[in-house]
Image (cartoon, rainbow, N blue to C red; front, side, top):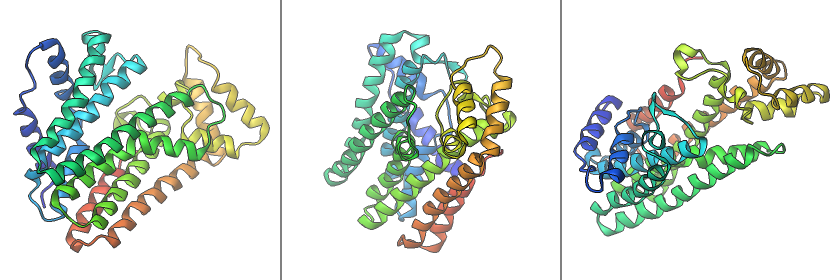
Amino acid sequence: MHSIAVYQDHFLAHLENQKILKEPKNLYEPIDYILRLGGKRMRPVLTLLSTEVFDVDFKKALSAATAVEVFHNFSLVHDDIMDDAPLRRGKETVHEKWNLNTGILSGDAMLILAYQYFESYEPTIFRALAKLFSKTALEVCEGQQYDVDFETRDDVTIPEYLKMIEFKTAVLVGAAMKMGAIIAETSEENGNLIYDFGLNLGIAFQLQDDYLDCFGSPETFGKQVGGDIIENKKTYLYLKAIEFAKSEEREQLLHLYSIQPSDNSEKIESVKEFFNHTGAAKATQQAIEDYTTKAFETLTKMQIGEDKKLVLRAFGERLMKREV
């Protein structure tokens, strides 16, 4: 097994060698641009890692890992259009740097390009990868639609919210790991277990993201703290606060989530106070712990060496050990 840094280096070298720039350049330049904007490359790294967990050279998974990364970035290009976002990783978004039509078309091309990366595999593996990928891609779109729908709904339930983050975020983490299992040609049971490991870790990670958006440190979180509150996003914290609050408190919280003051600092502090005293903050921390535990429980059933289980556990612990 290798370190995460080694997988990242190999993946970046492989990505660098891809001949993405071709004609018409207004279609392919934006694709090259978004793929070189950086990021942790967590999803492709998971494909490489999970291939080696099942005793197969991770280099065999580089094409599948690239498919995962291209698809992930395709979803970012279209998400940025939907959110009218000006920046991505501190740089101009594709639709801002070029234009809206280019963003749509280059995004479409990325989705097709992602499929092409599976063509280097033999038919049985190609079929399994493509089948998993199609299911996952559709679920990510469903998750995005749920997220859009929730913006205008006041009756979102916690199971609905968990389904949304499962589809929008976690299924791609699970699929990235299962692709490694498919390439390694391990048992179906192992493939399903490593998918569940990634899925539950992905849900825990997103719940933690919700929590840190509210209670994180600006220095270590890397994003504006309180962004979800400013945007009136109905996160797990918010839904738990609504569930636990007395009727008068609930009305106050609903009011806070209906206003857009010029200075948001007072609104953020008031909402954070609600999250703390209703018990929503503690409930969210408990949910993060529960999903992380569910992920680690799959390791006990996986038919791999204890050393490999420790590697997966260490990765999960490292992923969840973000500073508050």
